[in-house]
Length: 329
Image (cartoon, rainbow, N blue to C red; front, side, top):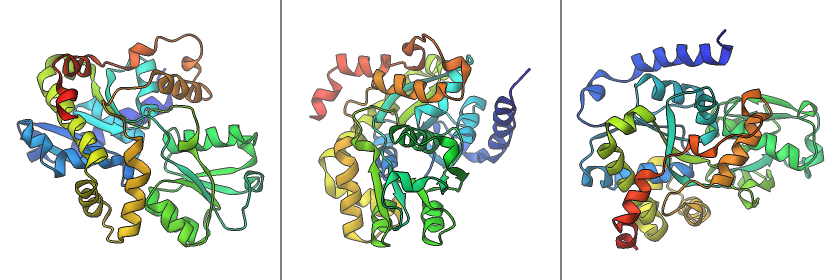
């Protein structure tokens, strides 16, 4: 019997297949999804906006698909070819034999901070309060689970709501519809200006976490290896540029985040740029930590599991042997 989650995935796949424009599907290129508007989306935006995908001979159509379930549904159905998002979205699917693998990772850290109303001064004050996340089963859900675990607060001691994307969660905080949430720059910067408290920066934790990874279908990688290689080459160069050319990175952020406040843009850049991974390899400890968090709600994630089933770094290995990353430095 298929689980309700799997039935939702299939239903979403059909809906997403219909949602992707036909003219985009007809292109001799790739459809690439990303899952929201936040600073950690920077590498993909840069790959497109700085012409690096075009430089590598790719016609890429960028599609915003909020919510991990919908994004993975689109990828599995073939409506998209690449998906940028958290590894926590693909791991449960791969555990059930899904045709997915991670080929690159731009960010191996949680980019979130736990933000709360000004009267919530310490983690214990969250007991009995409402916490907003993007959606259940995604990285914001797992981030809250990790924070509560660190603070020895039982999950049942708080009420967790699916409250929309980061701008919507910030708005919910400002109207006091929720008491706390997980946000990242630039929303955290605006939140502090509104007098809210940062209870914790999850990026300061030593634990790795595969927050921003690039996922493809294994079958797509096998049949279109050259396309994947060109994409990873463009993606890698975008990360390098982002880390080393602040002016270009700020131009991308200003355009994509619709933000003109230079202080907000500077703070967003300064927060993320040092954390991006170059070369974009996937930290196995991060996969292990994601599995640990997923196992709290998924019995198939318990026990000994081969971490390599979730990752294929053969394209990165090939680029390394060819000296591609050294040429960029």
